[in-house]
Image (cartoon, rainbow over the protein chains, first blue to last red):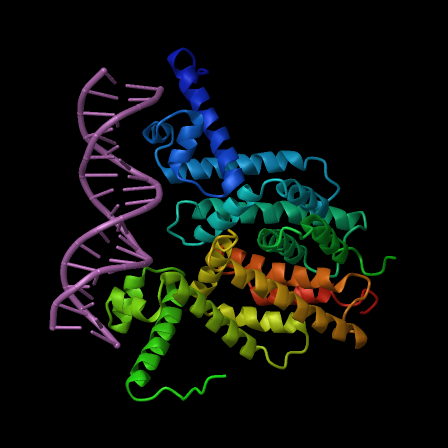
Length: 195
Length: 195
DNA sequence: GTCTATATCCCGATAGAC
DNA sequence: GTCTATCGGGATATAGAC
């Protein structure tokens, strides 16, 4: 436990710049899905080398962007009714940011390679999300909203798969209503003897 | 209608070479998911330029590989009981070919960009697969194997999404039993008042 | 902190000899 | 049909001045 002070004086500017670059990168990626460092540099009014001064490598910047997106997504589904609704909400929100979805899809595909810098990030992410959703389903069971004849972890993994798979289909055909489809899946997870 | 003869003489070798390259490329991609042309060239005992002599460009070769995989997949699920089982079978078969799955995931992500050479291929593919699965579900309904309280196209899209999404999760964590998960999804699509 | 300039890299594609 | 050689484009990363 080292004593850490809030950065001040000469540091402040650097910290803000970092934030600014991150914001800009998020925007750029949200629009195009992928872009050379140069483009982010231009937008933020810096040289390419300037950007690398803050993030040691391209991959580092990418990771930071992903983490930020995750954070924003999580915040956006605070207080949802259940996992299904939370995912539906997220998905609906993502429908405004095709580029970001594309970035995510492309990057998660690439991160599939164990030697990829983001491999750990994604592996952890799915593990954690699954656990969270399982808890949500279990709570839904207690209130009778979720069927209990199928394994909760199976349903959780399926929900995540649905979410990812639909994003792919949606990118190929933007007329698809992802949110409605997630809701359909959610109903498939309701107890069989209702209605 | 031009009169076409089966290639012979000097052509024969070329045709075989093409096949050989295609086979090799399929193997290489099945193992690594992506590779420079050079690697396929090495394996097939040709120079990189030699490979390009048969397939005008890298993308062309990639497309040919994808088509071949699709063909093999379709053949493998002839005579399945329903769409769910067909997909489960395919998925089980894919579990022996991580690299190919990776190639597919990576390429479909890239093909999301409308200007990508494989965009049309994937867009068509999902359209066609959806239609086929819808027919399967409708037939399943008539025999009482599939619930009829949800839209068949929704379920079809979800099945495809499940399949794609699970592949991603599986690549990140190979201990996942994709086939079992697909079967779980299949049960979610069964009529609610059974069992 | 920020820039300019440049070192590398990697790879696909092309030209042209054999 | 096949090779060698090479061009060309596009990026990332680094060195070093200011």
